[in-house]
Length: 79
Image 1 (tube, rainbow, N blue to C red):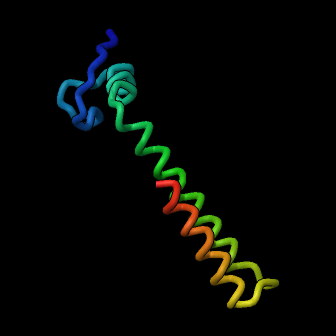
Image 2 (image 1 turned 180 degrees about the horizontal axis):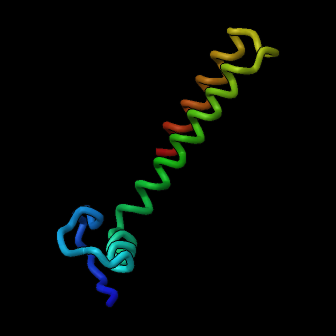
């Protein structure tokens, strides 16, 4: 049986919530989940971009810092 709920508690740890479909519906029904996942995705993309900047030997340190600063500024503007 699938039970839809807008409960914002952590469905995966709720007692008696062994039905995986219930957990999935509960998570989808929580309106903050997509927003939090999108923010997490943006943060991971920023981290990967910074890692790429740091590992690129063709960029000098001054340019590297400028590029990272621009990426961080763009990230914070999107918040």
